[in-house]
Length: 271
Image (cartoon, rainbow, N blue to C red):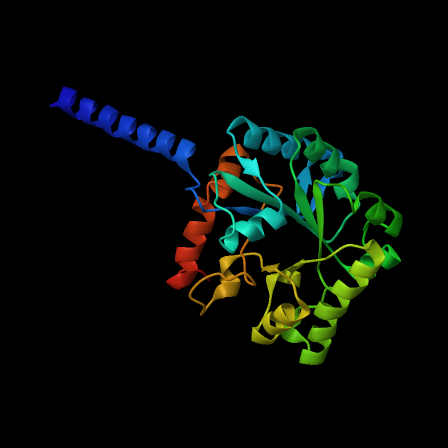
């Protein structure tokens, strides 16, 4: 009896390991494209109490992980082509985004991304850039990298308000004018938008569409409460945080983390 039980335990463990290995090398499924959201990449000694600080060392390990296991980081333009059906996914696509336009992107993240040849996007806040607020890139930095083929800039509004909590006219100005100003400043199209704090309402979506953006991004599935699915203007992202190790990072890039959250929000299991 003891021997049979031992064999059963080892068999069960072997099955779990096998399933894990299959998942590791097959997820995300073809056509499922995880979108990562970063804020700040800084040297280890500068990591603060905020979960939004990712150490330069951890970021390097994460990018090496993507390369080693043959993920294919793509630009927002390619993501748009896939989403609208103009291009077929090849499998293991992933998107790397940053919010707020912090100068740490240029100083610490971009050199690593460039070394791996990975495209990325950064959503800029007009007031932060033009007034150099909260550690943001300045105008010279933004102009210098605006035409880097691996960099895409998007809008994160003029002043970063929670769009669902301001009056509709202010929301419209934040969405429409930020695009116009960034396009004039950079002499290139700004086709992508990220909602501050991930929050939006029907009016904000309407203004994003009217402004001519191609894609708009929220942060997590909690912002899609009551909606059946994502659209081109409500694409969810998964935040990478200071507490992530390579296992939790794989959970994010495999799509498992987002899928679990989606189920929890859909069935009301999220407090």
